[in-house]
Amino acid sequence: MYFTDRGLEELAQRRGEEEVTLAWLAERLKEFVDEHPEFEVPVERVATWLARLEDDDE
Image (cartoon, rainbow, N blue to C red; front, top):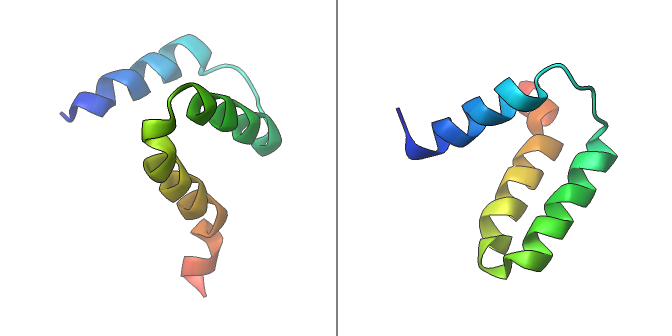
């Protein structure tokens, strides 16, 4: 198990029943980067990966 899995498991446990939009998620990620600029690159990589996820099938 990766260290990050604990955070992902907590997210699923606490908020797994909620429905959110990608716009909401993008705003939360922007807020996170504003508070923690040292994570700008990894957050950008995750956002780009999510944005292009369907493109990989082509």
